[in-house]
Amino acid sequence: MQQSKEERVHGVFEKISPHYDKMNSVISFQRHVAWRKETMKRMSVQPGAKALDVCCGTADWTLALAEAVGPEGEAIGLDFSQNMLSVGNEKVKKSGMKHVSLLHGNAMELPFQDSSFDYVTIGFGLRNVPDYMTVLKEMQRVVKPGGKVVCLETSQPEMPGFKQLYYVYFRYIMPLFGKVFAKSFKEYSWLQESARDFPGMKELAAMFRTAGLDNVEVKPFTGGVAAMHMGSKPVK
Image (cartoon, rainbow, N blue to C red; front, side):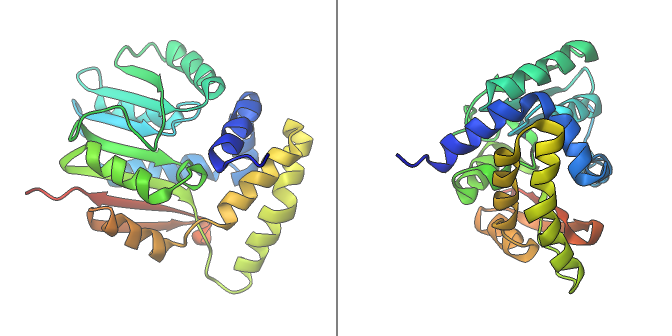
C-alpha cells in the first residue's frame, strides 16, 4: 500500500531527528544560520510579542523567536514529529527560558484560535506538508491583523548555469551526504525531491496573496537556493 505524503514525511523526520541539526549545517554549508538571522532582522520582532513557529523541528527558530520576544512575550513551536520535538525540548531546557514551549500538532489544522499571534513562522517545513495552501491559510488565520506570516524555505535558482549546478547538487550529492553523515540515503533522497518540486519565489509569493496576506516581501538567499517570503494580515 502506497504511503501518503504525510506518512512518508513523518517517517523521514522520525528517523533523521538525531542527525537533523548536523545535516542542516552540512547540506547548506552553514548558510541556513545566516539566512535565519537576516530573516529575523527583517521581521523586526518586538519584545513582549507572541510568536508561533510551525513545523519547528528541533526548535532552533522557536528559540530565536523566544529570545527576541523576551520573558514578557511567548514563543510556541509546533511539529508532528515527536522525535524532532524531543531533540528540541532538550535545547529548550538548556536555554533556561520559561516563555517557550513545544507542542505536538499538525500544521494543516493548527490548534489555536483565530488572531492569536503577532508572528507565525515556518522554516524549511512548508515543502514537506501535504497541501501548501492549507497551511498558509491556517498561518494567516491564527496571526493577528497587522501580524506577520514568514516562510524561510529552499527555492529555485533562476541564474543559468548555477541553476543546473544546484539541481545536480540536490539530486545526487545531498543524498550521498545523508548516507555518509546520517546513514539515511533514502530519507535525504526524499528531501531533495520535496525541494525540487517546491514552487519558485514568484509562485509562492502569489500563494501568500491568495492566502489573504498583503505587502508580500521576497528575499532570495545565496543565488536563490533559499528564500524568505513575508506577508502581513490585513487590518480591517
